[in-house]
Image 1 (tube, rainbow, N blue to C red):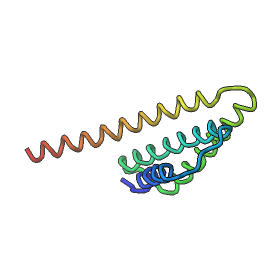
Image 2: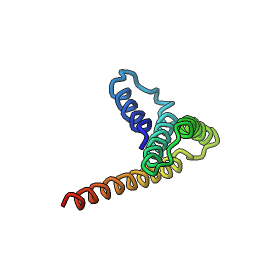
Image 3: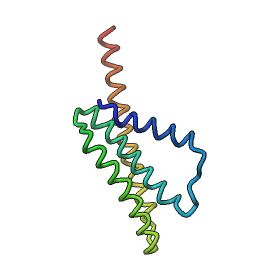
Length: 119
């Protein structure tokens, strides 16, 4: 598994926790959707690392493009009066939970195999 997505997730949480600034209310929907898209990319990168399919260039370009596209889609939806934001959060959250469940299943399987090996 590659370390880049895990480090990115940890650095993101640390920066957010230590940051004294706040996001302007008008920008909050766009930034929050971009953040959810970024978290989706990170968990997708961790999953790809577990599966042996991780490539740093694909991860980084996907992370940047997904966060920018998510923010732009939220802005576009706001301008035309369509709540694209809600649909995008719903889809991205579903992908995050799917990736998280696959990551969890992988590690539980590894733990079970290690216990059988030792026992």
